[in-house]
Image 1 (cartoon, one colour):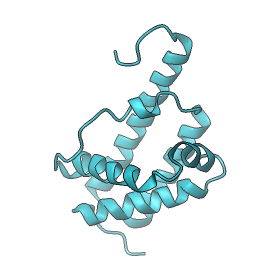
Image 2: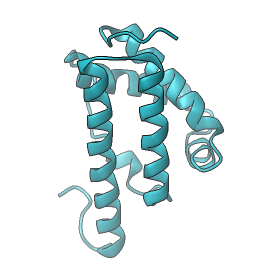
Image 3: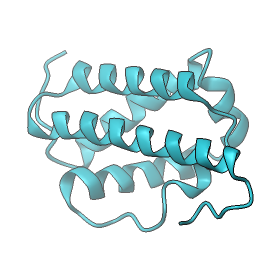
Length: 131
């Protein structure tokens, strides 16, 4: 494939679609995501397009808190490691440049923060997730 810059919503959709096609069939991640989303993948994909469009293209189409829906998922470090590996591979399969680098950096930071907050919630279940 010819790698190119991430410049528009079509690029975001390519990234998100290809990445989640991999997640759906991944032996570690697939059961978690498919188990939670069931037949709600289309709605989830629309949210993901808007999220990454807001983050990478600075077109503010996403509203909400991305952490909250993930707070109670049965996931741990190995899931985050696999998620990052697949995400970075997908970015590298299709894209180059500043936005591609930013996408990988932001995904890593988000995974790090989500993992930390999920662990904190498990260790301190009486404390609010929304601090």
